[in-house]
Length: 214
Ligand SMILES: N[C@@H](CCC(=O)N[C@@H](CS)C(=O)NCC(=O)O)C(=O)O
Image 1: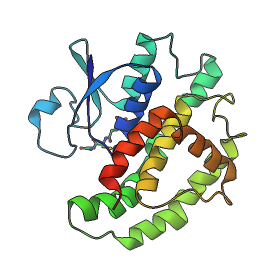
Image 2: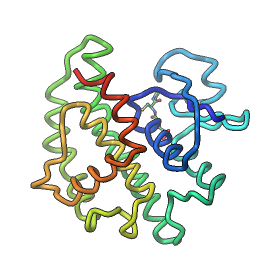
Image 3: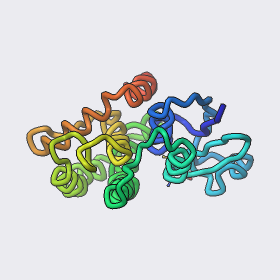
Image 4: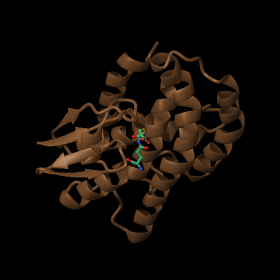
């Protein structure tokens, strides 16, 4: 059985949990915390980041790498589109989510509102949160709304990894007490809700709520 190294609350660890679950694969979790001094873990993940996966006795880091690896190892259970253009678009949404979206929903919202008070006994910097919510996040949501189609999937009107990569960032947004405004971003709200209602996501979210809901 493969071992997923990582802890709850990381959108990148969650991506891999969801993909493993969507593929019907069993795995065990090694609860590695990020940012800690753990030289042993660097043998598995040289940059010290979570997640990493040990599979058949060998390890690989990085959620994007792991999802691509799993897709290649289990081609009968695809989560990326097979059409080249659609595949490229799915990779683009993954990149958009992992970089632009994560850099706002992660450090500027989830870290401020949840991690900082809960684990470092420090209140949120409300100015950072306010700027993120009112200035930085809306243009990103406008773009996603324009690409959300009829709410059945960002790529080709079907569920794919593009939907997972975007939706995982909103789990952290929800943990921080926020939700996508369905009046302003109706298609995006439907698509994210639909993606998060899948059993693969629902299982992760339930476990995480027990930790992060105050
Ligand atoms: N590109 C990486 C990003 C992973 C990442 O940034 N993980 C964070 C936790 S959400 C982490 O481990 N940060 C610790 C650090 O940067 O030292 C991936 O997709 O796996």
